[in-house]
Every structure is written in C-alpha cells, then in structure tokens.
Length: 207
Image 1 (cartoon, rainbow, N blue to C red):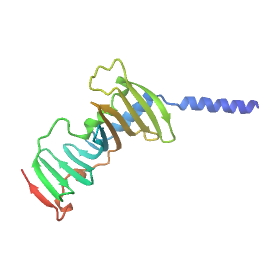
Image 2: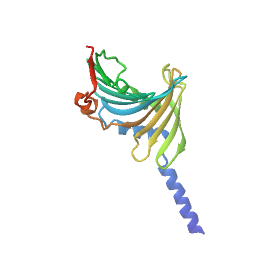
Image 3: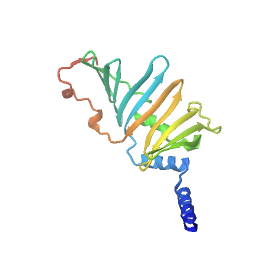
Image 4: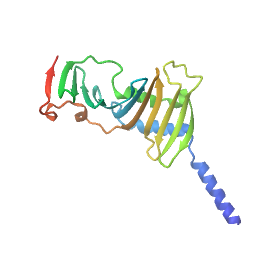
C-alpha cells in the first residue's frame, strides 16, 4: 500500500511539474511563429456579419503579393494583387478582369496575425479546455489595455507539440472574425497570376 501511495504521489508531482501556464504556452507559440519569414503566410478568415451570415476567404501572402479565394452563392472569386495590378477571376462570368491597383496600408496577412502577438501583455488569459491535441484559452481584455480597437475578448487555440496557432476568434466592430488553418508554407508561385492556368477564360484589361 505504501508503495502505491508513493507512486501516485510521484505521478501527481510529475503532472504538476509539466503543467504549463497560459503565459508559457503563448510565449512558446510566439517563439515558433518568429521562426518563419515575416512576409509569407496562408490563412483562412471567416467573417460573421449580421443578415449576411458567414463568409470565408483563403488568403496567400508573400511580401506585397496577395492571392485571395472565396465563394458566395455558388460563384467562386479569385483575386491576385501586386503593387500595381489586380486580377479578378469570376467563375459565373468565366472572366478575368485586370485593373490598376492602389496599395493600402491594411493589405497583407501579417497585419491579421498581429492578433497573435502581445496577447499576454493586454489580456488576462485562462485555459478553458485542454485536449490531447490543443489548449483552448479565453483572453479577456485587461484594465491596463488602453487600445480602443482591441477586442474585449478573444478565443485562442494552440496546438500541442508544435505550439503553432490553430485559430483565434474575436469580435471587431460588430463583426465576428475567426482566423484559422494557418500555414507558412507559401511560395511566390502561389501568389502570382498565371494566365496559362485559365485557358478559355475571357480576359478583360481595364488598365
């Protein structure tokens, strides 16, 4: 009996020793994300809007080049953007429209990834659920956070083993937003428009 008690005590102490705080988990996540180039990322963004419902867009970003794919009411739309030009494919019209593009400061997936940085500095974080694969955390805006644009709360999921972000959800200006399916395995080819990939599609140049 004494041996069983000692073994159980050892197991409990081991579990306590290896338990990680939300701060440690997020610090490890940020460290992993810093290993990848700062200008290349793939992600899916879900926007939940009143009346309109939920719309999803998959975005590839490399430097100043962007490719976005989305679908609404059965129509697929793909957009490629660089510093000067925008190409938009519409499956309903089977057409690609080329236009001049004026870059904005808000473009690029890395701006969206800012939600994953500095979380422990502006939020009080607690673990709400833990599975074999991930930690689920609730991030509540702290009183010391004076950023008026910062969401009041966020739901963060981090993968065990890799410490890579799985998803983050928040509400901004009444619009629910979830960033998920994040990857950094993106190349220049992924974001460059190739007309040979769309044989038979009408191209309309409006530049």
